[in-house]
Length: 235
Ligand SMILES: Nc1nc2c(c(=O)[nH]1)N[C@H]1C(S)=C(S)[C@@H](COP(=O)(O)O)O[C@H]1N2
Ligand SMILES: [Mo]
Image 1 (cartoon, rainbow, N blue to C red):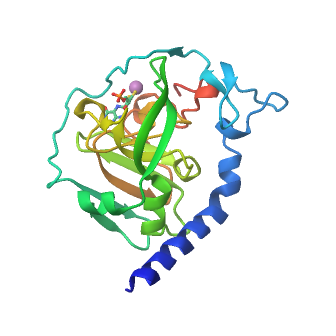
Image 2: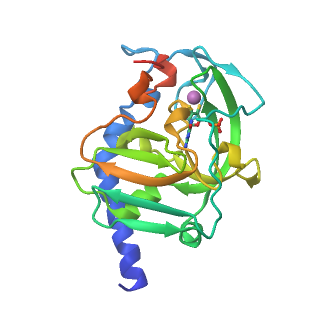
């Protein structure tokens, strides 16, 4: 395929996703809950860029960055690293590190809310938007969710209307430094509008699903939806 033909396909896939998910995305609680609606966002502090109080209900701001995982921290050399994106897609891909770095890189600063009640505000990240990867693989019309898998055996599911938000990134840099191993380096996902367990550290596979499935913590009593401003922690 010619380079610009490839580019056109990616743009077309992006537009298709936008048409399919824009409204659903706007109706997610972290954007749609307002003080005059049936669900009032719960939290404190100034209103953030998607309309919610900065600190979700029950959270305490910390400047530290605690580490939470299953205890095993897999080391993946960059020359062995790969990310598979497959499932309900028209164009499954296996990305090597160079392929990932060749994609458009974005810088964004966002907040990190852990279900164990700490929040780290204004973390500067660099990485690739999930939306960019979705456009690359061109999800089938049947795709509704993703399952993200880590090199440590972890998994977590996210709906597409959440995953396609512009602040959902696959990050390799935080605080101006390569993402530390203990925080999921070389690459992890972040979901600033959901609790942080929805962001897989050491991510190795993203599977598009035609039907929701539960990930590691979701099967063990954590909420499937994980909305911080609804205190939606456990199911
Ligand atoms: N691969 C993997 N990703 C994971 C986890 C894990 O155990 N393995 N833990 C999750 C949980 S419960 C949280 S709160 C965040 C913590 O990220 P941090 O350790 O960088 O603070 O990562 C999430 N992603
Ligand atoms: Mo967590």
